[in-house]
Amino acid sequence: MAKKKSKKKWIILIIVVLVVAAAVFAFISFRNNLNAQSKTSYDISAVQRGTVEVKVKGAGAVEPLIDETVYASISGTVADVLAENGDIVSADDIIVTFVDDAIEETREALEQQIEDVDRTISSLRSTTSRATIYSPVEGRVKIMYAQEGDNVDVVVAQYGALAVLCPDELMQVIIPIVDGVAAGDMVVVTIGEKTQDGTVYEIGESDMTIHFEDDKFYPDDSAAVTLESGSELGTGSVSIANPVYIVAQGGVIDDIREPLGHRVKKYGKLFYRDGEILSADLYAQIDLRKDLEQDLIDLEEDIADLMVYAGTDGVISGLMLNTDQVVQAGTSLFTVESNEMVKLDVEIDEIDIVNIVIGQEASVDFDALPNKTYVATVVKINPIGVSINNVTNFTITLEIEQASEILLGMSADVEIVSQSATDVLIIPIEAIQIIDGEKYVAFGEDIDEELEFILATHKIETGITDGVNIEVTQGLSEGDMIAVPQVKQLSAQDFMMGGGAGGDDNPFE
Image (cartoon, rainbow, N blue to C red; front, side, top):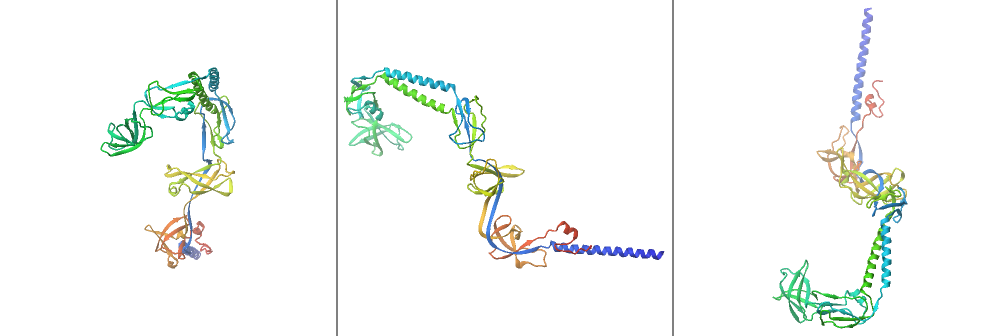
C-alpha cells in the first residue's frame, strides 16, 4: 500500500514538472515571437519627383447666389396675385397688381383740369399788332442777341434773353485765387491798350472776382490783372457785374431802337415787335397746362407702381399675399431667388482658411448627381469666425457653374486644392523621424538587421504634405534610396497564440 502511494506521488510530480516545463517553453517562445514581431522592418524607397496637393474638404447645400426681395413702393389693395411660390419667372413678369382709389381719383381730377385749361386757352385770342419792348432800368446795351426779323420766343429760348444791359457801368473779371491777396485790395486791370483801377470784390474757394468801371468794354474781352506793384495775378474774360436780362413773349423783332453799346433810359424803347402776340393771360394758361401735364406724368409713375414686376429672373419665394389684402408702402411682397446663379456656403477650419483665397476653384460632387464633378469658384470669405467646442470655423461662399440639373437645396461635397507643388521631390511621410524638432531620414545603407530600430541621421527640410507624401526642399536628391519603417501591429489573436504572421508553431500543441 505504501509503495502504491509513493509511486502515485512520483507520477504527480513528473506531471507537474512537465507542465511547468511546457509553460516555461511557451513563455520563451511567446517572448521571442513578440520581440520578432515588434522589431521594426523597413522598405527601401527611392526619392522621386511628383506632385503634392493639400486638399480642404467641406459640405454644403445649394442656395441662390442672389436673392432680391421686392417691396411695395406705394400703399394699396391687392387686386390680383399672378404667381405662386416655386414658380420660375422672368424679370418682366407681373407678379402682383394693386388698386388705389386715391390715385385714380387724383388722375381723374388732373385730366379734368387739363380739359378745363384747354377750353380756356381756346377761348383766348392772340392779337396781331405792333408792340414795344421797354428797358426796365437805365443802362448800356452790352449784349445783343436779337436781330431784326428774329422770332422773339426762339431767341429767348436759345439765349435766355433778347439783350443784356449793364445798369451801373460796373464790369468784372474772375481769375484763379492767389495767396496773399485779400478782398478789398486794389489792383490794375488791363484790357487791350486800356488800363483801369479795380478792386478785389470777392474771394471764393478757388477763384476771386475783380470789379472795375466800364470804359466801352464788352463781355468776353480778355483782361489781365496785376497788383499796383506790377506783379501779375492772372487773366480772365470780362463779364457784366450786375446784368439785366431783357425778355419778352411772342411776335417778331421789327426794329432795334437801341443797338449794342448805346445807353438807354429807364423805360426807354429797346425793340419794336409785330406779328402774333399772345396775351399775358394766354401765356399763364399755357404755363398752367404744362404744370398739370407734369403732375399727370408724375402720377403715371405711381400708377405704374400698382403693377409689381419680378425684377429679375429666378424662382419666387416668400409670396404670402391674398386678393383684397391691404398693403402699406415698404412692405415685403416676395423674394426672387436666382436659379441660374447658385452658391454653396461651406465651413472651413481655421487652420485651412489661411490658404483659401478669392477666385480659387473647387470641385463639387452632388449626392443626387453621381458620376459627374462640377466646378465652383470662391467668391466670398467671411472674415468673422464662429467658435464651437474650441474649434473656429469660417464660412466661404462658392459660386457654382450652373447646370439645368442642379436644383436649389441639393447637398454637395466640396474639395479645394489649397496648396500644391508640382515636379518636386517627394517621399513617404513615414520615412521622417523628428528629433529635437528637426526632420531626419535614414538611407537604405544605414539599416542594421541586428538593431530593432534605426536612428535617422540625414537631416532634411520639407514643404507641404498631403498626409501620405511630403515635399522635400533640401537634403535629398532624386534617386536617393531611403528607409521607410514598416511597423507590424500584433493582433489580439497573435497576442493570445504567441505566433506571428505565417507562424504555425504553438508551444501548447
